[in-house]
Length: 229
Length: 248
Image (cartoon, rainbow over all chains, first blue to last red; front, side, top):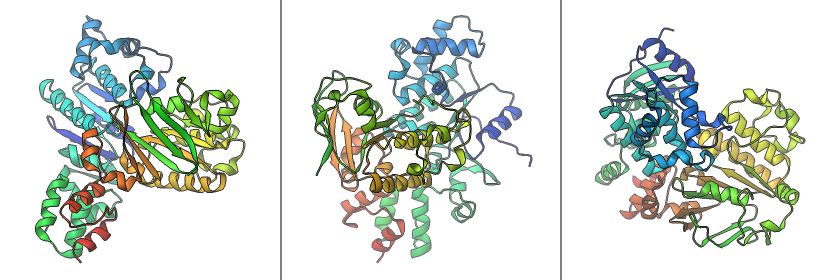
């Protein structure tokens, strides 16, 4: 099946898929822009000790031609909200979320136009998840990058993305995220997990014939439930 | 209650201040807290990778008083990807396959270990750890790699193993949903334990959990808020049940 992946600029794109390699390949084929992929690469770099070694190693590995690498590294760290003291930190002593931020800084070294983030939210608590989204907002708006989240977690996709592609179980759909998740019966039929807040609203509508709105925030559904009891 | 691990007034320069954690034998205990609160460090301390001179007890004996081989036979740890496999297949790594029957590793037993996926490698790590029949299994944030169905299967397996071989499990996570599969929950914040108890009871303290920066599972969060409006008496995780109670 020929698939056109429509990535929308200046918005958060989400992709739920069971074959991320294939999707990334399609994006690479269909885009002329430079792509940066962020995933758990650091896991295989056991031979590196310090953060600066890791960053310089990546410059060599990706054969990046950078006039002033030191400045570029410092700038990239600054964008992701880390200071240069991190360069001398031991990689093994960093928390998972710090490692992800370093990975993001490394990806910025090559000035990608499109940043693909694979399954990264799982490392972050609520506060850091929010900070991460603020950071991506900044990277998208200030540095004009297109952001794509590839993630299997419907909750995260519903919360943070505007445009969604589902390529899973022989299904391919793309639309506004909210519109897709409101198609509960269709998603059930195709074994796609529906966000819990949508699932509950759907159940209330179906079981009790109550016209609840679909919400994103627990406080909003709470008000709506209260109104209808 | 019989304690297997006792951490009393444990302090270290940066991460902990008078930390108190007592883990009951043959239970599954969750330790949670925001990013960088010291969960992995605590696992490394209990694994004796980080040596402290504090009074941390395993079966009433200071963990430093065990020989290395004694300690390894009692405590096994799974920290994602921190393992050096000795053999090239899992089949060769595990001596007693019947111990880990039910862990859904059958299909990967003969696969080259280098070719295993992240999830498969983690399951392999758990299987190798349990092959030694430890009394205590430490799992550092492994569940982020699994979906709900896979988590359910792993916990089901752990419960069965526990019944047969008296296993205690301590797991760390930032996802409080994981704690719902376990018996007891500790929340670390501001360098110490700020909440502890049965998971559902702890989840009722939404203000504290929000302050620490942890996500409360949706149904628990909604239940607590509905409770504040006197619409529910307790946390209800089942959506059908909640709808039926709300609209009797």
